[in-house]
Length: 261
Image (cartoon, rainbow, N blue to C red; front, side):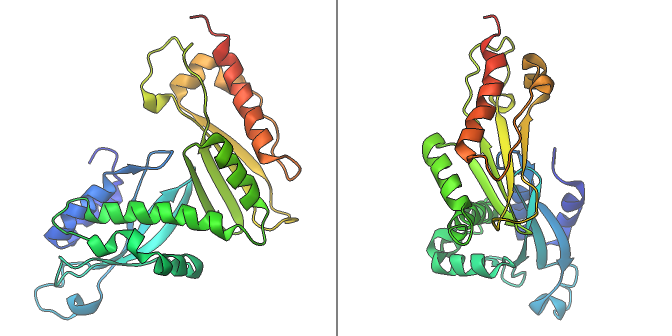
């Protein structure tokens, strides 16, 4: 259970043993650009479990906290069938637009091929739903926001790993920056050789909400290249996104390039 959320781990024994196994794999899995963990919240009993004698100890409904971008979280309700644990779970995503998107693309969710004998059964579905959410947000941004054009063109040029979330009228866009690390003197593992940029912008053009940018790199990498001394440009409404990203890449690449081999 190394790295697993302690509170979530304490809930596992309250599920049917079949579900305990597959949910353990969900909680043990790091996901996304920032290697964060899924969490279980708000356990409840519903359906047949609420009335069947001897089954009162099992929970069959909970909220799954889904990490996305740097520090954002989606919350989806998961409903299990403890009476017939082999049946696939139901998901409630609390977003009418995304729910419709899933309904139109149900075959892609993996729910129709759900196999409880696969210990990663729920994990595979949750990971797939998370990917589809990112796809949905980019599609949703086509109107009334101009962010769709900026983000789409950025991804076409850079073709990099990315995450996207729309919460409280703020769009958060995280991407892994393409950098060259051949001059680094330390033999760092790949997990330490990643730099991620998160851009936050208001969904509606002309909003009073702030534009923000944040760069994330490992402490080991920052120490070697003097990451705390790098001055990043200010991100704002009048900054073309791709040009801004290239500016950030250049300011990080320069101290790497001057290192002695």
